[in-house]
Length: 447
Image (cartoon, rainbow, N blue to C red; front, side, top):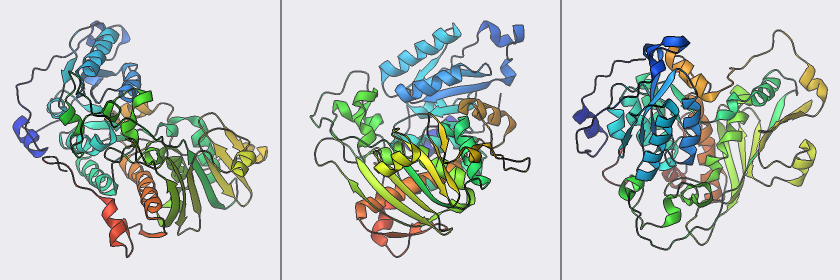
């Protein structure tokens, strides 16, 4: 599938800050089935994909792309040579054909006019820089959560995606799991009466991580890994990609911890289920616990209350939630979204959906509100890229969830109630808190 890309390589690299040197060759994988024989999808109907960031998270989502017959992954980019070359071998083995291209600099991948879409699964501090550049280069994108490192980054990406007509899928894949959609439909259709409270919880962040200076491993472009983040000496835990040592997830130079990295999943479902009732909070307050030593410095635990103009309250906290919640919803799961109404409740997590009374689940009519249906997040993205229609989680809704996480993090740092202007997306009468809505980038990077 082709789009018309009208961007000179030099001009593109200049507009995304620093120049990347060297001429690039564009090898292209073409398998035997790519000719459209034997019922296979012809090249003209395939979405050609490049992957930016191929650690464990990126490779996990990449597998879903590889399983789609009408997608062709032709290039990978990662600042770690071993990761990008290992992922390239995986792709070539899958297609049983050589030709996957590897890049250290994402801009060299984006300048290719044969690539239609990109998967972005970099560390959080790179998300918006890569995504805005991708949109300007005419690429559709599937981007891992969270959206940005702060509210201003999310605003910038939202504006660029909407300006360029980019098809955008946010990695809040719970929307493509049936139990979440059914739970949200019960709420939307008034099965629990008038919604008044939403209880949301997610796994906590972690503390620790070595701060001991170490030699940068061969094959890792550490300066590029840091990118727009402040310069720090290399330590292993700072930029490891395996789950057990990935402490960058919990360092504020690169993210805000699992208040957004994991918390955005149940928050997104809260927003989906409540619909217009949660169009924007008007106040936020809460408490948190922060590490005092080690590499990690984001909140390990948080307990936040968000008030909405609709009189709905969202309670957003880290696991474990109050014992009375676990007892009420008959669960021991470390995450979930529970909707409380005047006539009952519905609770949903990745394992199940439960209700206060089975009559809530069984009731329904032909006039019921039906939410957007998807059973596979990547499949939905590819279908929308072809039809040029919005995905199940487009950028506007992604930004809405992202804002909840960011202002929650700011509130627990200030330890006081903050008033929020949902139209202007600023705190009311609080210059100090408003300074937390954006941050500077290390030169030469900028949006």
